[in-house]
Length: 276
Image (cartoon, rainbow, N blue to C red; front, top):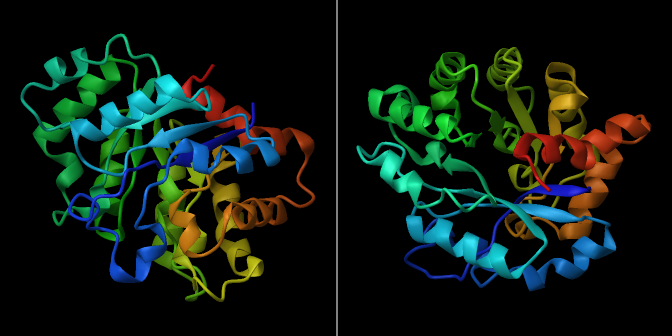
């Protein structure tokens, strides 16, 4: 299967979606599977992983409801209160929901650099690990060291780094980011999504060549067997359309072997998220 490992869907609400700032008005509206299904078919994408964008149980239930209607959603990465003292009870609600493949917390929005390494968070990770779920890493530079400590503490957990940790595309060499990628990739149970890159560049003036050194670095560190394609639709609309994201990925994969391309476009995501 060809899989887009990172898409979002939402019914826009200004209060809930306050992270959508005035300069992001292009995505201040509803985005549902019917809005992207035609593009997915055009580019031979067989399915997507729907990833939470709001930190609420309601968000997880919303994605589950969509997955029951739209077959293109092959997996859901939801949100759950990992720090709750009742984490096992919260997870029990989803025992029969096999479409839930993992969970994510928007750690990059947390002020504390140690958010991921306190006892409560660790208990939550232990609970989802027991349930066989994966965890998506969305972090900022202030969380780099805690992220490394976290993945080191849970060698049996399947982790995937979202958006290549958002390198500052076109702003010069970022040695802190480079070192983090190198250190994180040293853990074989951590994977990486090549996703969300165009919104880390100049939205109106980026060029494909700008992304080459960042992409080459993750390929060198993670290897093709731990990289997966993700569009970050509809957030990508801020800087391009779905065609633009596909074109960029194809450009970066120019002259890459068919086997490595197959892994990137779907085999890795299918195996990581245990999709069917």
